[in-house]
Length: 415
Ligand SMILES: Cc1cc2nc3c(=O)[nH]c(=O)nc-3n(C[C@H](O)[C@H](O)[C@H](O)COP(=O)(O)OP(=O)(O)OC[C@H]3O[C@@H](n4cnc5c(N)ncnc54)[C@H](O)[C@@H]3O)c2cc1C
Image 1 (cartoon, rainbow, N blue to C red):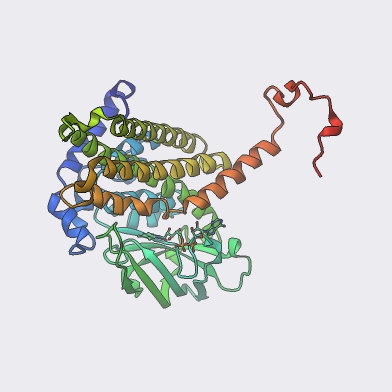
Image 2 (image 1 turned 90 degrees about the horizontal axis):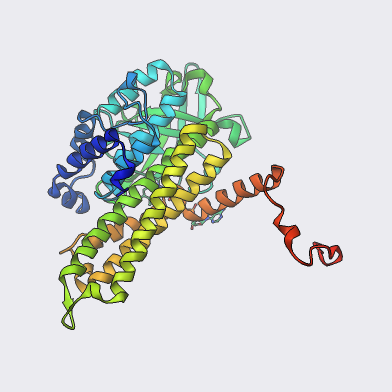
């Protein structure tokens, strides 16, 4: 948790409200979801909506909180302790909502955003396809126009909410345009419009979110359901770039909560469990794992806040993309390491379901893979870094010239 001294009274009240909501989530729901007995917990979203906790960053006019990333990240850390599935369902409102707030028509905001923020409408995002998720622009789902409607054909996979969500933000390329970046278009597809769920996956963790494969065969989507209406045609790339901010920052924010939850359980255990006549936390091999974990989580949180502040101030710039990618990469790696260390601290009992570490471990294994793998994050980080480095004139001291042999130009051979 961020030190309270750094929080305003309003921040503290928000954190308190989120904690009350999180404390009220029944333990049975977590078990039922982990056992795949519940596949989409509608009541959970409804409760979050009733408490005004959905869409914290969105305008109050649509039922949002009118706040910023700082507040959403505070909330995400608290929700994250529930694990990936519930954190994801909470985050999807922020992710899909981002697209609607920034690109949707007024009618779309009324029809989708308003009920989403009340928790009455479940939203899902359908980007990934069986032929590849990292290669987003290689998507093969096509949209063919006939009169005042589009007919969508293709497949999407690993879509959380395939079972249960009411509306899908689904990407397809417009037929007749070869350049995928110009052809990419975002559609708001309602379940009623005939999309078919073919397969629900048997997942290692992150269960209970209705993750499945969607098959579209000439699914009719009226033109008013193109995100942004006629003006939204071919703007999918822009929507994607904007949506990737919440996609990755929500992942990063929730990760800190997951790591924190596991660490708290393990650290408390280390204060009670004895070996060789000592509390195990007296062994440096244990307490240093705790030290390393606390530091990782504090660093992750700090980076998340920096990325969030930048996103609030500048929107989807290259620099925001770099920081958001760093935050996602660092926080998810950190959480995975912390949960592993927590299991190690607990010894054998940590591997059983007597403690929640094994569920959190199964959950956190996913976070370095989804919302863009951490390898893709590295790709983006270095790309944006080199772009900044090589394009801007240097404003800082030229340290290269400080070398004692800097004048030996003939030694500076580059080719
Ligand atoms: C449980 C779960 C829930 C999910 N939820 C959703 C959802 O709700 N909506 C949705 O649209 N998607 C969702 N996803 C999809 C997820 O985002 C993708 O799985 C992820 O982006 C990776 O895509 P892929 O699985 O196709 O792997 P691939 O793209 O096939 O990648 C395989 C490997 O190759 C590496 N790789 C690929 N390209 C490069 C490159 N250029 N440089 C370096 N390495 C590279 C990757 O890092 C990875 O290690 C979910 C996935 C899972 C498992």
